[in-house]
Every structure is written in structure tokens, then in C-alpha cells.
Image (cartoon, rainbow, N blue to C red; front, side, top):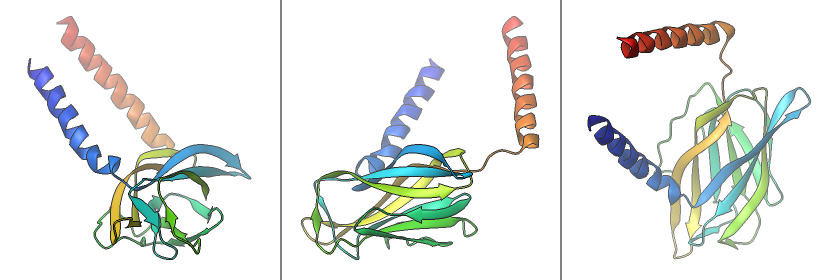
Amino acid sequence: MRLRRINFALITLSIFAFASFASADITPALDNVTPSGGNFSWNYTVDVDGNEQLISGSSFFTIYDVVGLVSATAPANWTESTQLLGITPSTQNPPDDPTLENVTFYYMGGITLVGPQTNLGPFNIVSSSDSENAGGVFAYQAGKQSGGNDQGQGPLTIPGNVPEGSELSMLGISGIAMLGAMKRKFVS
């Protein structure tokens, strides 16, 4: 019974935690990761919802804390920049490690692009890492069709750290110890 209450509480908490992401109005998503000249190409597409518009020069999204950043490229009508401290919308406070590069993609199309728009891209980040960090973060700013700016943030899979050999062996040893402890508990 107690386990059911804990599971219900975790599910409820997850729904509330991701509710703000579900309303993200410029939403990048990882399409694929492919080898690229000794590095790895991380390819993203972007959707814009029906309440938004991309305004040339003021709409953007930033992907934070990219491990092993080599370069970034944007599709037509967009430009990119990299910086240690991300270009962050004024109402957002995403985690931002000042030692890791961030990539910001700006809409520069010259005309206002009214949503909904799907599959904008490809937005490309080249990294020396092929390890996925599903705990990455992006933040965005777009124009509301009803007027004013809309800002938000959400989760995104980004290039992450590859655990070193010693870390992997410690994880393996810890896992074996946990299995042994579990076995003793269930055998007793």
C-alpha cells in the first residue's frame, strides 16, 4: 500500500514538473546523433505552437551546457552564437555552468513567421561527445500572436560527459554490491 502511494506521488509530481514543458512554445527536439569527422553531429528540429510567432531579431532559443562543443550551424533564416554564459530570456533562470559552452539560435528571417510551424531545421551542434545527457535544458523567447513576448524553458537531450573508466568500474562494483544485498534480503 505504501509503495502505491509513493508511486502515485511520483507520477503526480512528474505531471506537474513537465506541465510547463508541454506548454513550451518554441520546442527543440533531438532527431539523431551521427559521426562527423571524428566528432558527432547532434541534429535538432524545432516546432513552434499556434499561439506564437517568430519575430526576426528577437525570437531565439538557447541550449545550455554543451559538453565538447566544436561548432554549431543554423538553417536558412537563422543564425547561431556560442557563449559561456547563455543568452537567457529575462523571466527564466535555467541552470547554466559557466565553464561549459551554450548555443543560441536566433530567428533572422526578415518577416514574422506565424505558428504553428513544425520541423524547422536542421539545427546542428557538433561535439566531441556522443554521450547523451537527457537532463539538458533549453530556454526560448518568442512573440505571442496576441502581443508581447513569451518565454519559457524545458528539458532537452544534449551532448554530455562520458564516464571515465574508474567511474564505470565503481558503478559496476556498486551494482554488484546492491544485487548481493537484495539477494540476501529476499533469501532471508
